[in-house]
Image 1 (tube, one colour):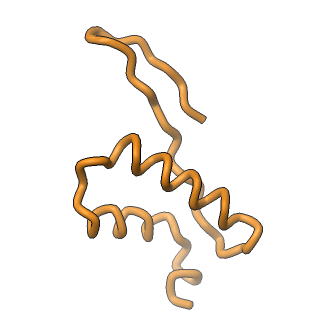
Image 2 (cartoon, one colour):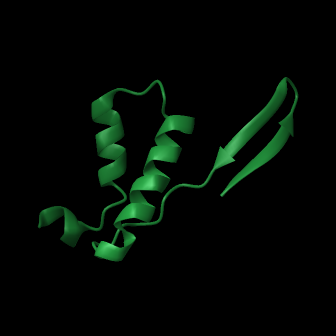
Image 3 (cartoon, one colour):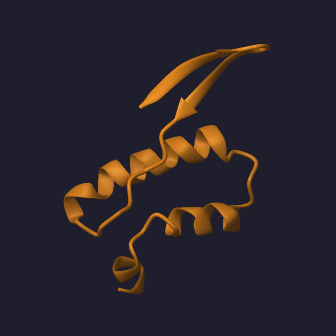
Length: 66
């Protein structure tokens, strides 16, 4: 999931964005783990509302409406 890239000034960790969440119960834990990892590595300084909007963008429309 995460790969280490060498750059001038040190190493940087690249984290995969989560897959779209379809609403299937068996995918909940995987989705939450991927979201938590991405938020903690890439969006640490973002506002809470920005993070919520970003997470919701990975939830399929039918699931978000339910």
